[in-house]
Length: 464
Image (tube, rainbow, N blue to C red; front, side, top):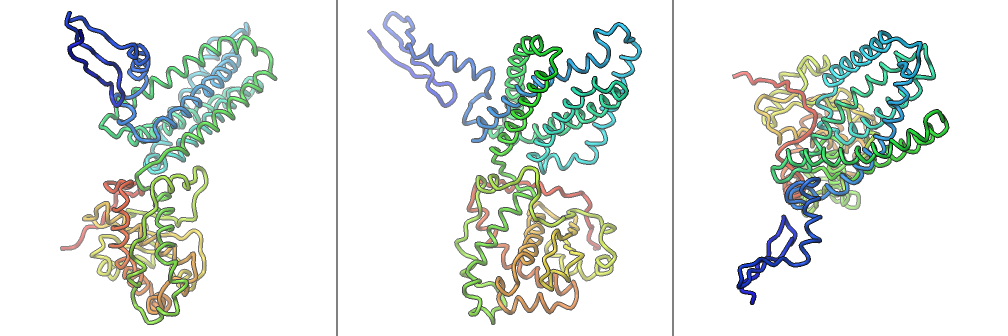
């Protein structure tokens, strides 16, 4: 006779039913056998607590990432075979010294390339991880292509091999750094190490399967250039396509410059769309009507990430955030005392070198914006500075008379110098700031604790 039944679960799923009988023996339902294999698979290849312990885009990304790793392993085997042939494996006339020197040159060039690339582009790997993740895979395929053709050019073998290894070193830096950024996004349960470890297990399994296939493939294609290049081209297409799908499916919740540009420009259009229809009634207003600043939802994470381009850039301006005063153009340096007084409450100074073209309504693309941050500036001050930049960008995109009330329009058009121009745009930003924050905070998808605006660390100390 059964006395009690207990249901235990593994993560979010029911795994098995435990019954306690009078004889104290344990009876497990037949469903356990089905769950056991799934639980074992999850233990080795998925983070603990999956799917609730990872982001919603985790599974789709990992599927595409596994496919690309499999394809890359196959092309890597073909390229490795070509390199071994190039250094003289199987050639009785080749010497150990020449092969050793070639290998040393290859490794040395890669080390130098790794250091230089990390120094110049380190901060960009966080801010534009989608772009650099995809670029890393393009560079990887280029490196494999160079390795594959290197035996065909004996007199250029060593330079080609060195160039290929430089590209691979860039792939190593960009790939590992962007992967860390993606894992940080996926790990939503303080399980960064677990997500990273299971990602490594998935990639190892993919490489292991490709390794088994390579035994058969290399035996079949060795010596047949047509088959080698056919396999390489097919696998490269699969590799690039799966990588593109992988980065496109990511739904990153942190603003970088591109995602903020897409979101805020859409929000501006929502704010000012009614002005186009009611501009004649606003001629005497010196502020944006209240009804235009209400009930405007902020674009969500899914829409913005879907619109975010991977390889090409949007029409956003060139922004130099956190720059030194010495980076400012001479005209901006001369205005510094006045600009510091004007921007003191905002904790940033914005200078646009081609402001007169904006004033005249000429569309300049891209604009160049310099942002000097005060030492007291916080992440929200950087966000406000970016709002300021994007507002000016929006003004350039549309005829001024169609989006702004007459009084505000006059302040911008009739500004005699940059001080007055900046003052008028600051007034606009201050009017928009509270509605903007209310709209942004009502959309709980976005992470407002930190931003990836690629800011340098120069800060202006106030004179006490």
